[in-house]
Structure formats: C-alpha cells, structure tokens
Length: 360
Image 1 (tube, rainbow, N blue to C red):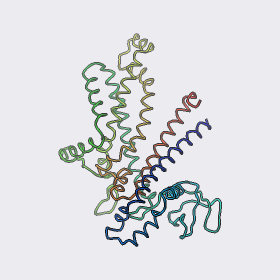
Image 2 (tube, one colour):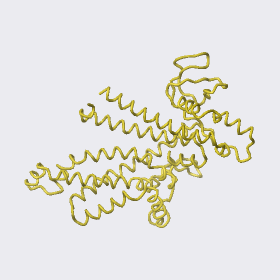
Image 3 (cartoon, rainbow, N blue to C red):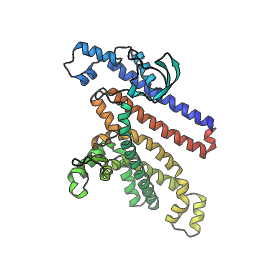
C-alpha cells in the first residue's frame, strides 16, 4: 500500500511540474517579446529607462529558460535562495516562509519552504496570500454544486428507472441531455438575467453577489446564502445530468439480475426493490463520476464566478488575464491543478483500499 501511495504521489508531482513548465514557457516567452504587461503596471507613458528597470527587477530581460528555472526554484518546497538583495534568487523577508536546512554562506543556502508564487504586478501583494483569500469561495461553490448534483441526480435517476419507458422517464432524459449539451457560461448568463433581473421581484435573488457581503454602515461582513443559489445551481447542472443518467442506466442493468428477480418473486414492489436491493450495487460507477466531477468543477467555476461576481479563484484569474497580471494567472492555474491532483490522489487511494487488485 505504501508503494502504491508513493507511486501516485510521484505521478501527481510530475503532472504539476509539467503544468508549471508549460505555463512558464508560454508566459515568459510572451513577456520577453512584449512590454504590454509593464504598461499595465505603470501606464503607457513609461520611459525606456523605467521599462528596463522593471524588466531587470522581474527577470524579464533574461533568457526564457533562465526565467523558467528561477520560477521552478520559487515553486519548489526545497530550493536554493538568498537573502541578499543583489542576488537573482533574493527572497523578500515578508514573502519567505520556511527555514534553511543546508547553509551556504551567511545569507544563502537550501531552504525548506512553502511554494512562493511571487507578487502581483498590479498590487505588489503576495499572490499566495491573495489566492488563499479566494480559495474558500471556490471550494464552497464547487462543494455546494456537487452536493446538489449528487442528491438530485441520484433521486431523478431512481425516478427515471421507476418509470422506465414512460413519459416521466423520457422527459427526464430530454432534460438531462439538454443539461449536458449547454455550456455553463451560457446557462449562467440566462439564469442571471432571468432569475436575477426579470423575476427578481418573485425570486428575491440577485444577478451577482458574493457569499460574504460587507455592510456599508457597520463595516461588518455578513453571510448572504441566497447569493450562492444561482451560481451553485448553474455549476451543478451538467454533473447532475451525468449522475442522473449513470444512476438510471446502472439501475436498469442491476434490475435484470437474478437476485432482483428473486426479490420481485417475494412480492416486493418496484420502488422497494430499487431502494433496498438494487441501488447499493448500482452506485459504484456513480461515486466514481462524483469524485471526478468535483475536481472538474474547480476548473469549470471560472466563468460562472466571473458572470455572477463570485469571489473565487476563477474570477481572480480572469481579472489577472485582463490586466496581464501573469503571476496571479499562473498561481491560480497551479492552485486549481493542485486541488485537482489532490482530489484524484484521494480517490485513487480509496480505490486502492477498497479493491486490492488496483494496487497490483
């Protein structure tokens, strides 16, 4: 089991390293040939001397591979760093979290530290601290959408199996197919306009808003749960449709088993057979789909967060792209990728515990 765990962890690290390398090559190549990010920081009338100073401060004047190596060194938990301001590997004191384990000189050495995502071009704030403030919003939104999709998807799957071949089954199949076909950003726009504007007087829902709202008079932060309804429903529609069809199809296959026929011969009704005998065996593929979708929702929340004004990693990343704030964009992508890898690692380990054949 330990060998299996180490194998999966090593695979996850390689995936994250590959994503970091691709991101670095893309963004650093662009920065080397374009000063637009600097103009976004300082204005269009920036002098050539100021541009050169900023390029030197952010290592933009170095070859792309050197920039990539410096960035990977910042990301690595075990990295070589210096506290000397004249060094290319200089770490500002307020951005450093770790301790030196192999000293090389008075101010240099190998450090065991938290990954350093650098600073925002726009605000100069630590990217890691900014993303930590946005992370709870994304997690709450993704978990809410997944819980909603799981409960309703399994329920409608049971109803569809119970009414197999009749009009409720056909109607649910039509709705689920429609839900899988429509992109999340389109559904978000329609829901925001329809329920937030057109029917606002009846629903009381807002077209946009965050979970935590600051009162203009008291300055206190209040939780407004109704702002979670539209984005979580929007984000959960596609996984709900998939879970419903998976539940329906697996239940239908299980219902043709011998032990189900035996249960029917004892006089049990269809709904009793489904709930007491068939559902447990039919849910294994559904649980697999739920775990996979949870990771996907973290990435899929990007446009939903932006359209509904929900403060999370997705909206922060889109804002960073608009302002060419590449450290924020790269940090957001790496954070989402890390969560996706961790979720898949947890699922793989659970499979390994439940089924020893997977470990072999």
